[in-house]
Length: 215
Image (cartoon, rainbow, N blue to C red; front, side):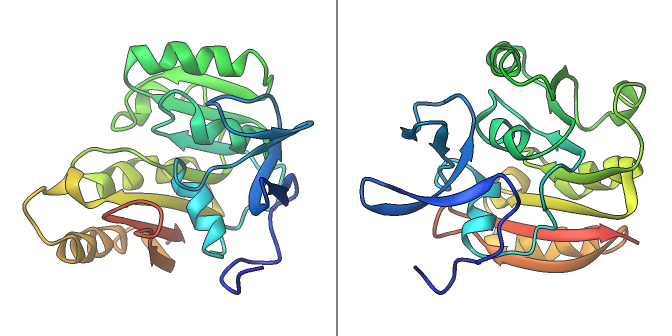
């Protein structure tokens, strides 16, 4: 087992052997062609920023059973794994085409609630998402990622967690990613206490993962 992999994973996530490799897995029906072993399916860190955060041993605060607001759910690759381990999981996605896939994923997961909404406009789904959620996962590839996090901080409980994957190229395709990350962290720090950061380059180019909690 690699030293950079944590021993403490959320309940509902295990390391299991697939084709001779030790990989993260959750219990649930397959979604994106991932390998399976009985009820277990691989959580592919190369296709999931949150999976990459767990692989890198970040302290996500996820223990299992949490209420989660997921921003940028796309067609359901990562949020399906979140729903496998979490409690009520609200999945916000702006684009209609991937939401159709997301709805199909939710048919097999009664705790997953797809929302065709814009994460930049949380007032449009505030009447649906319950207050004081435990975790906000943000994977929104748009300019102004710090502002998206700030606008959605209203949903977090006092000691909740923001788990954000910041995509440098979405902010400024011409700038050095390190400079972009510094600027985004400065903006985030106005609203959140930054607990941990890590580059995800091993799995995702030009991405920074952030664990934070509301100020």
